[in-house]
Image (cartoon, rainbow, N blue to C red; front, side):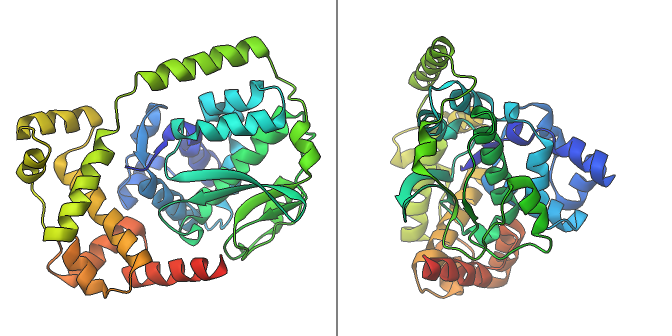
Length: 339
């Protein structure tokens, strides 16, 4: 399951209550989201659910730049270990590399890339499972946090020359200009910052070799003791069976993995998921993949992922993704054409 550590946006309930007079618990009941999850900062939530949550927050508040304003309400401490690695490295380049390399502590399904283009260094962000047009507010939030981290780490010395987004401008783009200190460009092929390559050598004001080594040791120790992601392994098996047989039972998966159903259920319990939840995640991931990479009719894709009724599949897909299957395919096609 692609996921987000809710600690990175732990002030969302407070922001809704303080700035918009929206009671999170009540709003959560309206949209089917449990805001009490924010009480534990190390709780992880499905990336798709977080994308949907922020889009619904923007709709509820009428703020088309909600994600940026939410980022401004936070401080970089919300980034946790990823932010500490980025701030205590020796220079900006090392800080970016360390933060990006360990991004999975905060989010999976989002990748950053540092490259060169037209004489600029480019730090770009990409969601791996859906186009940026479906995740406008999370993109705004992510880019806002990245900007704040790099500015703080360099004592406000880092300043991009260009900022691009791979979707249309919000209703009030001047709010973004005020936050980022430059006029963003929209309908581009990437979400990214363009800046002078020499800025990669900027020293970090909080750099500390001893602290940095402690953080690196902690990361190494933590990752060495992490078990393989059982849920991702299981979803891979589920997606394969769905494509081959259009059905999938717990007993079938257990037999294929040479395990008992009880052992498999125990593993899932440790991951905090039931088999039905895991099956649902795998279904939608496969549906998205087929919508993106094939020309098959939506009805056939519904059959592939185990839905006998197209209308039921369309309603379930729209509820999960916030967009119809056909619209999802159209938006993905547009982004691919731009790239």
